[in-house]
Length: 289
Image 1 (cartoon, rainbow, N blue to C red):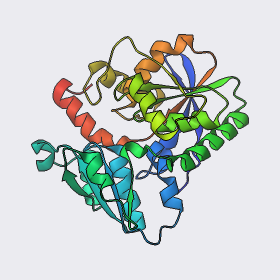
Image 2 (image 1 turned 90 degrees about the vertical axis):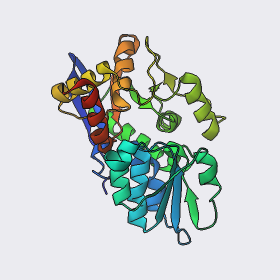
Image 3 (image 1 turned 30 degrees about the vertical axis):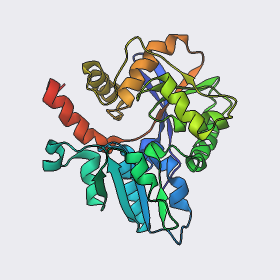
């Protein structure tokens, strides 16, 4: 598996923007989840027999962990708070492919407590979205790769932008990069992001800078403007982005870009397997664009 990904110069709305193509790590193990779980992939755990995690029923992390478990020969247990009857009857997206990889999924009103109760010498528990110290391993390597890319391309005054769920990727990139890392909340709000950061790096001196938006977007809700910008990006750049996090990220990024000084680098964090279910949801609501 090749973790070194290209940095590509693209154009969008008459702006030159570099795209770090972490979606190209692998079709099945890509983006920030591959970086977060690289520690578990590259190290030996002779006593471990299973990996346990929790989150939403279409989580990118869920799917990536199912791939990791399959590679390692581990059992994979996953807790979520609900599965709709539609999804149960017509599995699709990350849920479908994680099941195909052998995931055992359970419904729980307290997903985190259920998962953490299973910690023992044979079990690794991965916190929701990879919000844990082990993620630093792969994200530091990504930061080193970005330093090399920036130097090789001769980029002056760069800054990095990426949308955040738990914000762990942005956090560790800022820890290891001298340039500003900008992010935005796609789950909760800015206070939620800061709370997530404090859980893994309470004493870090510099946190990423959070970009706000004129409109509040709710996680997982469908927005016509988000569907539209996804389609525009794909047509103009020739690059497909994730339909859950990236459209909200691009909207907030473009709202703020006039006030950001320097050369932008957008981190593509993969998650394209999840587009299967997201496209179906959008098309049911808005039709095809």
